[in-house]
Length: 94
Image (cartoon, rainbow, N blue to C red; front, side, top):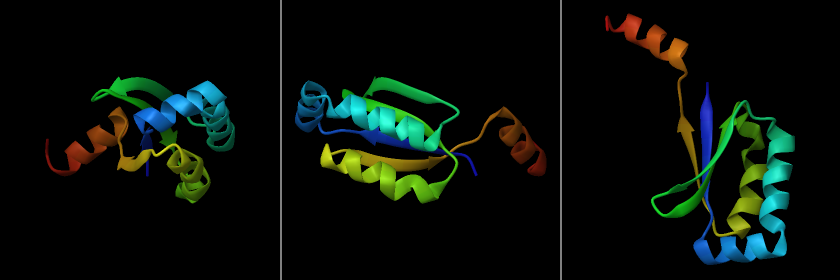
């Protein structure tokens, strides 16, 4: 199953992590560990947001703990690519 890991650090703790260099280190370590197909960074609802493609939920504890130290809200969202969507729609006749 395709999954997206969406992380939003606390604004103040995130700013501290940027100033100390911990944010860059955490992101780099996460990318090296999970080797995501895609990674995106954007402001979402006024908060710094990182989105990683995650194919192994076993990585979640190792990924989440450094993010939690930044006060992050971490969500796992099931996702589909175009082929997945087309297959799903075909099943329901859409």
